[in-house]
Length: 420
Length: 208
Image (cartoon, rainbow over all chains, first blue to last red; front, side, top):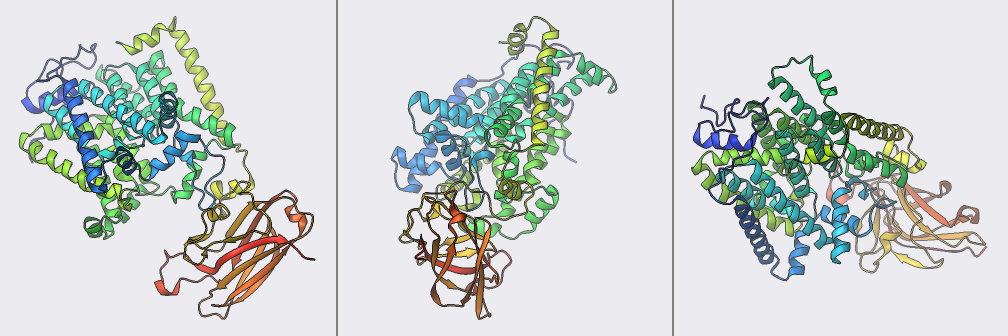
């Protein structure tokens, strides 16, 4: 059996991601990676050869220029309006409607679909930007998405204190497959930004701050509420790392007021939205009940995954870009494998978060799984670390991932069902 | 900047953190309780919660001027979908097929002083059967059953008692009894089953 890229000891969650990255490349301990989990966290020491801010800025703006060229070429029209519209497909229409006129009282008569399914924080931010800057809903939404994507890059630069890993992260996040979701009117970039921020605060044991950010996360997407469990898991891991027993954890947690507040704060976004829905249209669970209109109902996620893997439609997707459930299933398998890897590295809070964020939507349908997977920040981070651990792997993978996104982006602007 | 310190400085003591946590928990618990008591219509409950019907609830619907002929052909109608509820197939050149066991039209009208007459230009399809049968009801009240010879374009009518439209809301429901798969597409469980092809409809004041 080959040697692991990262040893579990090096990869302790509380030593977190940055020092882990340097240990990946140098195979020796850094000052941070030898940090005892129980002791106060030392100030972060950057090991970037270049300014991380500059790396993020350059790659972000280069990616947007690249996306503009690809979309303009595919559409045969480089006008800003055309490119903006080409980027706005599928759920972008729902979000644009939400930004423009808020939640509807009635569903679509033909099928029962309604915008209650979409959580409020992102459209609320975009609607504010729209009003402040007098923009169209689509432009306002894209502005929020891109600012969130840029901010996520900056947070990643704080986490990944190694130039290669940061470059890998920015390449995957800004150029990689499905990266256009982070530029379109979707919640994905905000979700990644908030998730990364949460984990950054958790790495410093700032539970209250993590709880506050998690509250925003739970107002962004329904699975964001799972960060509540992650906060508990991180505190539990911290508790054990200090040499305490499992049985003493409940009492110790209750004696930690910031942790107690964080745990109740984290799901607040979801509960505020539920309260709003109850008083607006009479059903606090409307966001969940409306899933019926998209044929989503709870089932066994592994049975759904197995069914999707058994289908024989990958060829049609490769040839013509038709919808392929096996393609979606393969992305899910990749995500589960990376989640397993996180667990093997003892990065349990991250593993728990990604596992729940995969299994919950998967338990209702295989549709949209690639989008859900690409928006999982811990997977973006660990993928960057894996790629950065091997220079040859990185040199092959990054251009390949970028090219794959060109194909997907062309399909996207042509409204192919593969990306629904 | 230590965000946690910033937040904690807002509170004078740990007790304050517990109090805030308690208030938030009480709010969240009250929302959980609210989920047990949805205040929604029976239509909403049946479609979204118990999942016992196939048609979603609809609002008032677009205003309809009595006597207006509405074509369901894709080539001429720009706002026809405003009257279509659930149970309609994709638009076709001359009209629209019903899809599944329930198809609905809905609209708001001025409360009529007399009975109304619903008129449809239709063509039925019942596979190997000679006739298609379609139950027609308005606002939940059964009006009639049409027996329609297959493949014949014809005009069919139903009388709508004025009492049914007194609240200005019309929800017209068609239930084709013999659903069939589109013949040209071959058998498939995933194909929607059709029954009646509607070219246009008109609702006018009854002459009687």
